[in-house]
Length: 148
Image 1 (cartoon, one colour):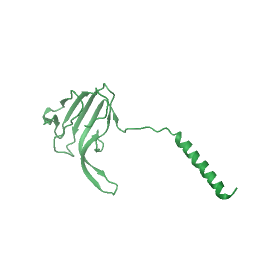
Image 2: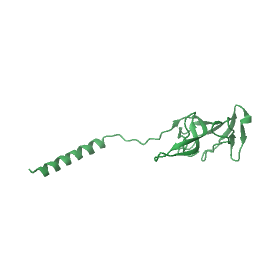
Image 3: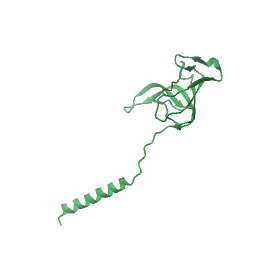
Image 4: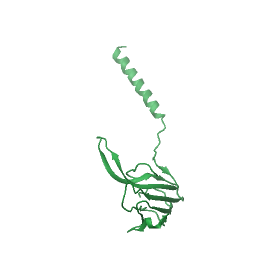
């Protein structure tokens, strides 16, 4: 046998082994997020960083006191759960009222938590003023992926 043929055989065997190994790896689809059914979100301004080393000022929701995300954190619940989202506006970062709308969900209620003077009725739903908290509640009746 010549050297070229031997190299081709080793190449084929090597590629075959790679495909066998890759075929045994368990691949899963995964959504990073926070599991509920109760969530504490904070509305705040923050920066996201770009690949070129720049940054952009954004408005977003943070999981508790974490960094704001865009889009907001993925909220993971089971069908039939009563979902509670407590939204607080961080007065150190925002000076405007903020609310959340949950398209596709039925029977969403919004209630002021703590000082009712730190909330107001907005165009679509109750808004939290800076330093205030609004609690949104609904039942996750239909499976699927929804925005907020």
